[in-house]
Image (cartoon, rainbow, N blue to C red; front, top):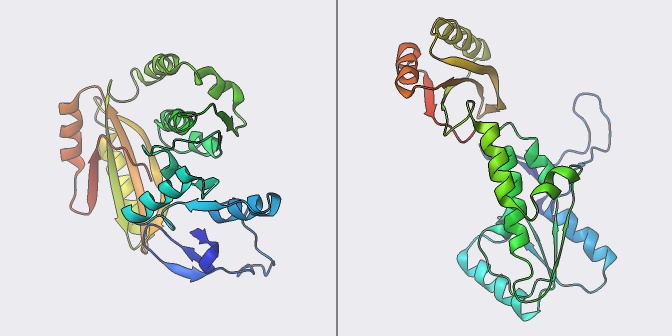
Amino acid sequence: MAIHSKYRLLRCHYCNFTQTIIETCQNCGHSPLLSQRIGTVEAIEIVQQAIEGIEIEQFDKDRINSAKKLQKTIERFDSGEIQLLVGTQMLSKGHDYANITLGIITGLDYLLGIGDYRSTQKAVALMQQLSGRCGRAKEATVIIESANREFFAKYLDNYEVFIQDELKFAKDFYPPFVFLARILISQTKEAKAQTILHETVAKLQGIGTVEIVGYGKNAIERIANKYRYHILLRSKERIALLKALNFVHRHDTDIDMDPIDFS
């Protein structure tokens, strides 16, 4: 559930379930309930309180929801009408900002912690992309917030070193050196989902050419009243992986070859 402070709503971005923000715990009665994560709106409020008269624009999907709004915002920023853009990863997506003299990047540590073998790729790429938005017309300073200073500092000015380190990490374990497949199980009754999971794992354990990397609940455990489980498989031979998937496939499961989404 994502907090939308402006509208006082909690919304699931997967199934669009929406409810008003609750301030009292429905289980223990504790009040008030507070969010520890700072979103775009909260960040803007903090800056406005600290710097009187600054003109700030919110730059995320809630605010920039059309090409016209995007273009207008960039034009106002380039002209100096807006002094600060505060937003999400949208800020890094190829937009050309001519006059940036200060860039501040937060949240990279969150990317390092996601359950995805490409997490370091995503974090370093975002750091490079956002840094690249700065200093195009004038000299600029980039400040990066992180508890992993040594990791990011190593790759600040040398992306080639990161590529070499990432190749060593991926060899023998992740694409493009091996093949992955993900079996997805989604059921309205959790007991049935668990039964399908364990039956499928039992069948796979007898296949020597395919490795079961792991299995269990999805990162997003439930969407639209369906309980979600998965099994991640790995093999150096694509044909062997396909044969194994064909052996265990059933009509109430889905298969994702070479998965890039692990939620």
